Image (cartoon, rainbow, N blue to C red; front, side, top):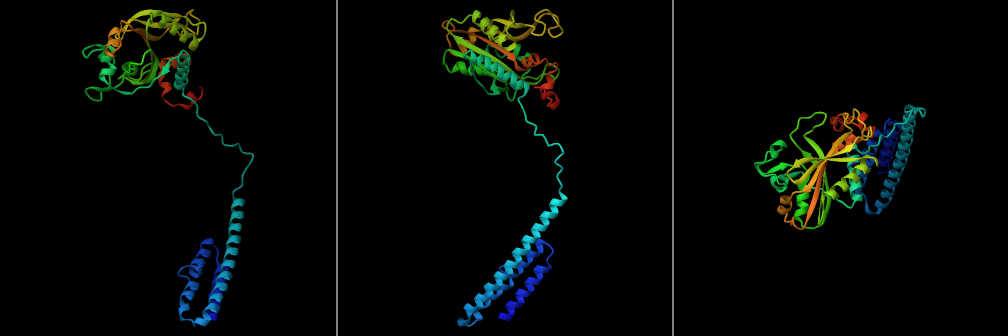
Length: 339
């Protein structure tokens, strides 16, 4: 048995000394010390050794194992060190090279404009409310005083999913959801993405954003509407900004108006930006139609209110003097980096 152990040890040490790679050393470990290795086979044959000789043989096996393991581990460490040193010599770092810059993202101009509008109205005591982008015909049209046969439904070129389900064309449906809850008074804005079947050009897109506002309370008048929107315009475009209201027609408001702001580029004297008029159209507004109040179970004899709506992209285009709406969605980093 002793001779066999000496033979196993000498062969193992020879293989270790002749190994050129870590893979070859691992093969030696498996062949000698593994579950099916030579030393394990010796231990399994202990049943053939006389009982009184087993402790001595077991000790010799353990000593042989320890000696082989010691030489093997030392050889592995030397080989790993040599491999590491060779790799370090090959991988030379030039510390004079410029470092790689980590480019950080930032808010999109639409997001910047949205947050600024929200900040202004929150400062006036308004609540920001989000609604579903997939709506029913009732909330998108009928509850806003636009019946089934009304031509306004054709003008908006709606994306219908099924007979009664559609992609919302305006965020006004969110206002109806809030009115139906019956928690009065209401002071809210409803920002969000809307969808219309428009051709893509410098001022149109089939997907864009609106911010619509609603106030419902007792004794609300058109004077409240004008004062609120005049303050909003000054906060957004500057303290010197003036507003002008022009009569218009919307189904869900009566009376209705378009609101213009004095050109913040030329101060109202006339320039290319305002097309020489001194004014820029910014939003539509009006007093909430009594029919809209009734359909949401609000008594128009006790309550009144005003509503307004604006395109977020239009705000961004005006505020940052962008000529083409498509620039907001083309994801050109050279353009977006300016903001």
